[in-house]
Image 1: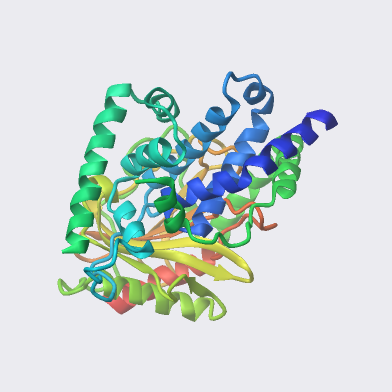
Image 2: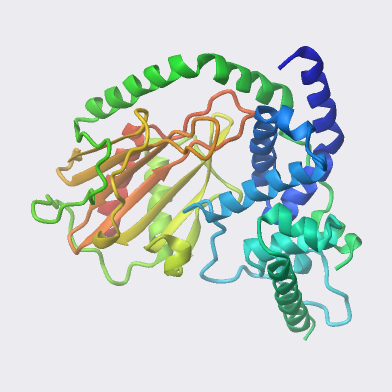
Length: 163
Length: 240
């Protein structure tokens, strides 16, 4: 890669780093893993920089790399999220309070990796159904059904938290 | 869910550990040294296995199961039916403490537990424990699981850098060792896996991953192959 390309690459990455870290965190719920995922994605981005910058939507291309890196991580044995045999001790939720930060995090964790990715892409990163389908490599119908199921799960979990 | 709610979940992000300069430097080096690295790493892998006292099984193209049952040597006792995933995680923690007293589990000071996960999610594991182990500033994944012999890993290599071997552990148990090459990732991911055959048709598996924390200079796993062999035997002793 030429020097000018490298400079351009650094500028591109710097401008989006916080957004990538935040969306990676929403996907994996762990800053350590989030930085790991972003690091892998940045490496892939560097390898394919010429192709990336020629893409119609460079941000969507990068987001696709990030999301797929996470989904690959989630599929691998022992890198997967580990369910606890017993739930950790926690205080009973205050019925008068709205859902707090930890409760929200728990709600997100209650979703599978792909459903969580759909929710984050659609409702946090504001991607359209078409863009989300393209990023995840699935059909638009699947995006819609996964969104609906994920939202139903979240509503159910939120109700039980408030009960 | 609105963006505000998501931002509440995220909270205040900690300082980034993503070192873009180091990543770029490493990618350049990787490209430049790829050919040399392939040859050198192959030699290292084979040497490590020989040093561990194992006879290397030629495995290129071999897709058969790596766990023969007819002549398995089993010096360890029967696994108690009362063993829980917590016992397994506890045994892993104590065994790691014995070989690497300076290592710390993150984030809660102990491995997490997997209790009878579904077959799809666990790749056949009955129970297990896994966590991030920090040693000398480097954090990597270490995991332990118990599987049925029928679920044994297939000894299949896809590149000269990968290797698998069968031999006897220091205590005389049948042991299988793998070194992985994750072709889906551009950089090396050196992963040691050691399987130890237990008495009642079960296999104890230990994994030491090289995480892709490119911010760290060292890319190797926190536990060496010899560490891993000690750990797997120690875990077996504690559980049988």
